[in-house]
Image 1 (spheres, rainbow, N blue to C red):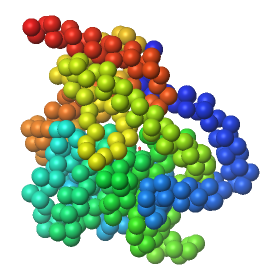
Image 2 (image 1 turned 60 degrees about the horizontal axis):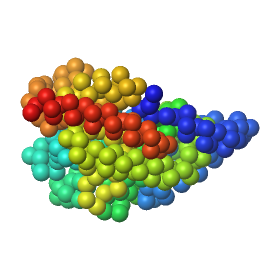
Image 3 (image 1 turned 180 degrees about the horizontal axis):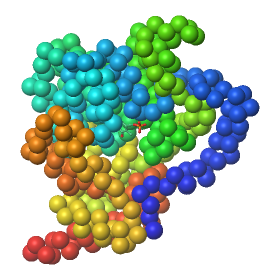
Image 4 (image 1 turned 120 degrees about the vertical axis):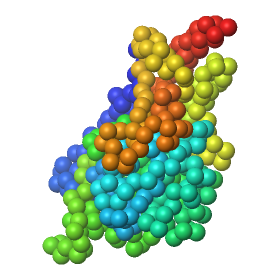
Length: 372
Ligand SMILES: *Cc1c(COP(=O)(O)O)cnc(C)c1O
């Protein structure tokens, strides 16, 4: 039995440290925000090459507040991709703005900058690229187009802690960066949490005020805000885990490299690390036209897989109001039909990796012999 990810293996490594950190929060009774959250905000901002970090209660809240701080509201349009987790698009919806999609690049699976200018209208306010699967979007052309048109850039970095584009880390290139610490993410809380990065003092101030009821000082509510505060226990757990993140990311990169070597001649289409990028492999999504059969074979062999994501957001019933139909974003639709995420976690052993690859290659061999 090989799990898709193994949170228990990671907990075993850090259990005693985590318990001490949690006990400190309980003893201090700083259950929400407080010193543990503050020091995590600083440490994670530094890790992400950003001046400021604002801790919130989820990645979705991070996106919502980043959009609000950027001045996005009803009547505005925000350009993003349909091949993402639904939260990216829902956060745009929360502000009253309209999500506008551009398709992704078939190899990097991130926003295709060549399609961006055609999607810009007088109502466009922001561009929201997603660093999908742990690899950053092609930020240079995206930022250049945004500057030319006076648009804000918000990075959805929920899957990309520590990912790099030309030596620059996720969350540090756009005007704002949004991270999730959902337990299954590369850096996961023991509950829900998120964070907004920015290099702008003004945007930092806006997000801070919005996450805590719009109050600049207690009971002085200068804007309509939210209860999106990060919990003290999450700040404490994340501070412990951040110290191990580089080691874990290198573990993921080791697994991806080994998959790449072992499956190079398997005939299965493998994910690629773009030049000048540091992919952090939140998921390792290969591609097969016979995905259902491949997934069934792996499942029969006790190997868990995932699909990220099987239906692009423009075809989700929840977003029917946008009026899209099959064929509108063909690359996203093709990927949604074919991607299959293999087990990926830093603690994966060589034997586990080899067992997964043996099944994948065996499946591909069967396909090949059928075709010939
Ligand atoms: C996980 C995720 C989110 C939402 O984060 P939560 O912490 O679950 O609210 C947003 N965007 C992407 C791409 C994600 O993977």
